[in-house]
Length: 240
Image (tube, rainbow, N blue to C red):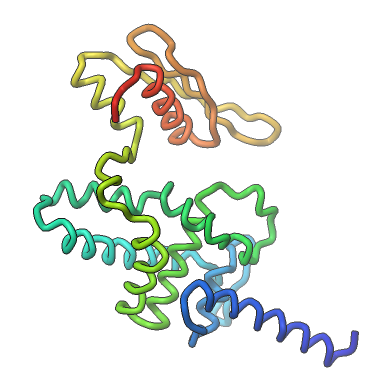
């Protein structure tokens, strides 16, 4: 391949990349550097001319705040009779890590990520992280009003069904503990970590009084206890 062919191939790759971006956000980015950053993972260890890290993490932080603001405003308008606590709970269900991960995964955002590690080794959170970074980049590129339209298009309209969300459980562990207090039951978690094949796993045993009810494992303490709680819900036939 000659030098001209090399640069032509690079240009074609970029054209394809930004075409895919425009399909997601609904327009061709004005600040293309922002969207390169959205799909650059910290494992690339890239720094800009000022020596600052070049990856999606700061945009993820911004996108998280913008998303929370948009969803809060949406719920405030749609649920005029709900109090602060009810609005907060509904917002938590919409912007939960599990929900954002699902949306990001269905949008196949990970396919566009530039990283130096095996993508199969990423946890599910990477999908939601990229989604938040996109919202942050759109906010910087086009402002709040366009960010609002994007969130409505990719999150609210296809995924937010308020009548169904009211009965959705955010945390099975929290709900299980609330059930146990209400019904004078004693629920305890005994969780320990163990290194296996260079990976740390967390083993959770869930007890009802002195009886072991569930034993599970997962990649984090939080996830193992949440998984155990969800299984306990089914075993105890607790209505959500």
